[in-house]
Length: 258
Image (cartoon, rainbow, N blue to C red):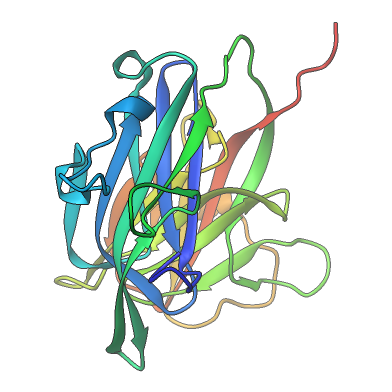
């Protein structure tokens, strides 16, 4: 929530057996200038003399060189108390319309207020990961379908400093792809996992094809993509007007009963 009354995005929280992840994703016209994050014991919240939350004193903080709409922090569980923790996810956000900043706000992940103002915390109970089961899936960065019938594969128009969702099995959110500005004819694409998904342990789980114009209306062949093939989650490639981003992922599913 930005400025107490504007819904500016979402906060994702998930843990594995070793780490806890907190992801910020803005929506609509909102972008982030900076984030401050506290994760830990509820009786150790950083507060000022009046008992109000003090984001400047949070242990995890970053100011971005350019506006962002996705960022995540990973924290080893060994640094956190067992059981449930308090999370304060704060961001400095702006609303951008027509390339101009028209509004600036402080934003917090929604929860219960702390102190005498509206600043908020929420609780998260660390899941015990005794067994994790996965399904192998094909995933694509969201965009326009290559063909109107049959394959649901999609290609994405390039827009600098934007983040698009990545879906497996057509409708399961498994990650995001963020595009940088063009620098010396190159674009950096940063991939981030969500909802416990991860890349498959194969030789070329990431395949990217750039296009100078919308590709022909035919089923794509990711194995023949030439712009990039490998396993990196941050990839610098030639600048194109469109990209097909194909991932081989494994997503978390309920384990079968024995």
